[in-house]
Length: 336
Image 1 (tube, rainbow, N blue to C red):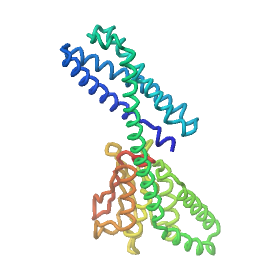
Image 2 (image 1 turned 60 degrees about the vertical axis):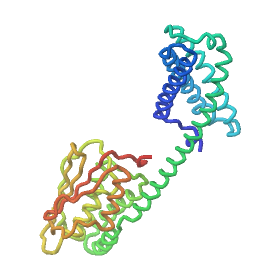
Image 3 (image 1 turned 180 degrees about the vertical axis):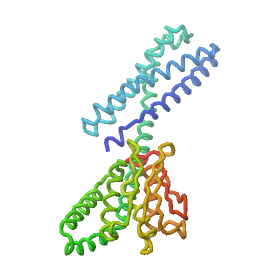
Image 4 (image 1 turned 90 degrees about the vertical axis):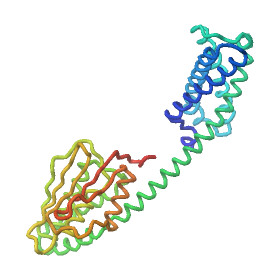
């Protein structure tokens, strides 16, 4: 929970700076106008004040959240946060006045003569704003954490739905192969073991190289049943791509399941990659697609692509069945 409560992101500080500059300029210029001083000087001074207070807040609060609060009991968090927030406003006000003098920005005489009292007041105001910020950040981070946990739970649920029927087929084929060729049976068992080990990997994303290796192991297992009639053709792999686990394998499995019939002497499956679109196409020369409606397996893959990569799955061709994965930007934690 420490990370949830204390994690103020860079974009949060950017928004705080913008808000600080805007309100500082607005309130200061309004005060200058009411006291019949140039509003331009007020706006400049307000901007300097907002910038300096935000800068001190960034330094003090970041140090507090990263290096102090995680090491002390939670009971001390509120008093320490009050002190550092107050200190940010107090010292930030002195710094803003100093910068205004250096830059020859006009100051209200009453303000300049009571700098300590004004700094104390702004320090208290900064603490109130800081307390509101803390509540906002904590609530936002809790929501992000819950969203992350939901997505991870959804991904785990989808992964458990991966159709294992190929495994049963492979085991049945191995049982028959044991009586025919013990060496090939042993090799097949090792491939099944490797495939299962990869399926138990908790990572939702794999490197493209590992995923294609899984596909080759899978085709080798299927060829036990189909007597080497499944031919896989793979184009050169792009570097540094990550893909959802078993994404290509599922499309190859689908191609074998729906594309290969006893009328075919062989089924050729082609993997190609488009680096410009960051896409992966799986094409086969088997039976034409009768429908573009996705079943459970392909719907599963489509959801995983959306969750992990903001990507999509499209049917590009029905006559010579071609499915294309558009990856987008893939993140292991799925946009958390």
